[in-house]
Amino acid sequence: MDPHSHSHSLSPPPAPDDDPDAMPREQQQREEAPPGYVPPMGPEEVAAVEALLGYEFKDKSLVGLALTHGSFYLPYRSGDSTYERLEYLGDGVLTCLVSREVFLTYPDLPPGPLTRLRAANVDKEKLARIAVDHGIHRFLRHKAPKLEEQIADFVKELCQYEYHSNGLLDAPKVLSDIVESLIGAIYLDSKYNQELVWQVFQKLADPLIRLETLGRHPVSELLEFGQKSGRIVDISKDGWVKDTKVDVFVDGVLVASATYAQKKEIASNRAAKAALDKLKEMSGQSDVLSAPALGEAPEPLDELGRAGALEL
Image 1 (cartoon, rainbow, N blue to C red):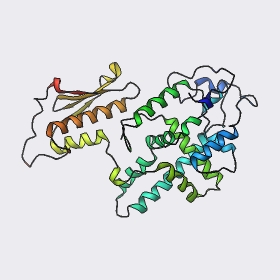
Image 2: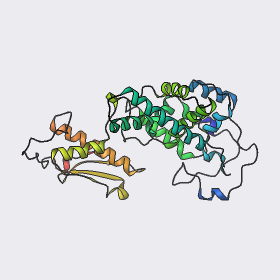
Image 3: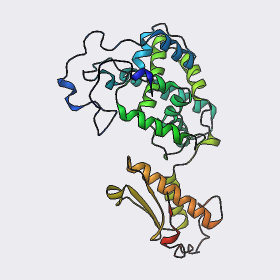
Image 4: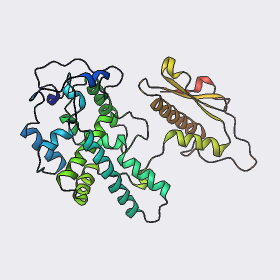
């Protein structure tokens, strides 16, 4: 349990059920929080965050601001005193700095792979990993109970993937938000010193995802397999609304299924990954993307049958 998000005597109403990151619809009708309702982050907590970042702030108030979620003000309006503006700033700075890094590291790489490398190093999952790996998430100030459950689930599953899950994990957006907001706070506090910001981020993000560790999105890989092998790949999401399940058919045969209630996209990615694993197992190869020889028909999958379908 986060001691920093439960240290106040006032008992807030529950967060909205549909989206724990969103403020309630009636927010605009709420009054501003009275003075002192939300205390600043204590000096011990500020110093602990500075130690995690490896940066000492001149303006200590930026630390608390960068870690304050809008729900922390419930039942009052949050106004502008949340991490959102700093998050916006940090997002832009990181995009610029990581673009420069991959551009200089790979002078012969075309724009497509450069874009994928940049995205892998600044996307929601990578930044959320940084928050968890360095314990930054423990200092998040919020009053959204569902966030605790989401973060705990993410932390539990994170160890299964060394660098990146490539769409198999549902990283809580709030974790990537606070990393971006802290980067924005450092950028602001350092008088817009990009080199200093890069030094901080490089240490936090180590190891950066490089070309040799850049994974592939399972849906893209599966569809490419279909195109190269002449097989018909169908990722059916018809059952997701009813039972949160996505099925993958290859040449009309059910190959794999996966369920994930929170997001259809995650269920689709997991079903595609399960299908790829099954196809690789059937072919006895580590790469299923090799196309059949010219004029050669693809081998039928009929022998797999529904009994051989892999379920997550």
